[in-house]
Image 1 (cartoon, each protein chain N blue to C red):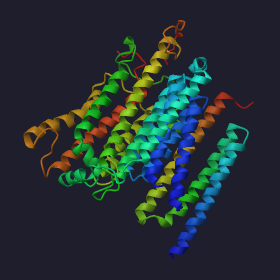
Image 2 (image 1 turned 30 degrees about the horizontal axis):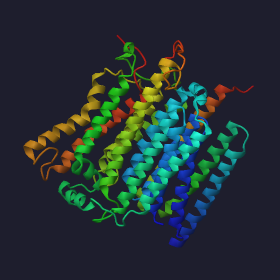
Image 3 (image 1 turned 90 degrees about the vertical axis):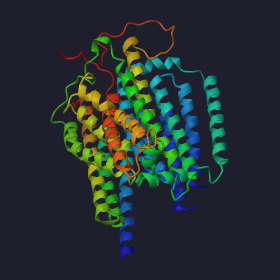
Image 4 (image 1 turned 180 degrees about the horizontal axis):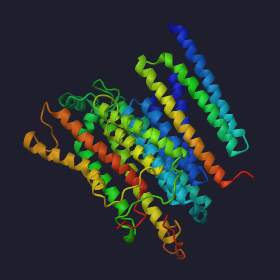
Length: 97
Length: 315
Length: 113
């Protein structure tokens, strides 16, 4: 049973890291600030979700799993707010023609 | 090489790379963002050194609150960056400075490599005092009991810093409130975050203060989280910054050191001297002191970040 | 190479980097940033002293850790005071130079932000 959990953890974390790397490639290669923001928020949220999902079988007890999910929710909240604020600031500087 | 060793080497390389970026970045804003990321990576290094309390403090105060302070300063100083570059040192002076710094770093590295192993330690004395206080977290015991005098003086230093920052206001603004004067949107994303995060953050902050008696945590870390909640609510303009002559603000700021000092002086009467606690009653007293310390820190840190008053007092 | 030695060498390198930034950057805000870097390097060296002093059942000596926590808070308050001084200087003179012989320039009207 625990080998299945370990395999699941490794697969989920590897997929999550792949999404993080995809987001970083987008950050480095996209031409515009708004497109870079898009790449970061989408890919990083998915990557974080997969990593937390992969860590859930390794958490100690229900409380540890709840803490991991709370971390996930807080990072999503912060990331979404910051993305909105950055996009709003960009729009104010350069309104779309 | 084990996985953990590879992790340590990778972490150290990353920390040095981000620190180097902070030094060589062209704009101050980019350097400050690098510094915030550096602080978070440094917290991971502290966890690897088995100093979890220090990691919490570094992430909350060293990287978080300092980052807010420096980002707002960098935004306000953007216009002064271009004129400052014509004061740059010439290349030979920079080479000399680089050589001096390399020599200093090499000397310190030699000291690190030549340190005795195991080194001299105060852990046995700390462990001895730990049993008397009834606490489970040795750091909290050292902070509030073994080296309580240092902690009390540090609270006084915080008050002095607030007095210093406030005294930088122009005379006509004394008694007013600090903070920007721009209008924020009440339905904006920041207001939403502040409304959602503040209640949760207050619970987390109080929990970290309370649990610091037996596990990693404590007054500084919990107080920093509470301070961050007040700061985000002020930044979202849900609550206005208080005027610096408000009585409740001044009482909250001094509550921590005053309670600490009062209980310390009480130690003359009921225990064996200044800042000693009566046996059997130590843990409740320590938690009482820590509660007021948390409140003071939660009030002091935002006041240090908001700066001197920038508006005349309201009549 | 144990974690403590690696962290100590990182701390020494950070002290060198911070010192270089403190000396060479002309803008005071960058100097404050480099000073913070210098401070965190010093705290790291404290941290390895704590780790090497592991005894009496603790994974790290708690006394240097408590001193580092105190140091981080004091460093933040020093940074806050330094930034407030810098902002006041800019408010008064409009420039960040510390040279006494720089040509005087009247501050911008309404630069009370």
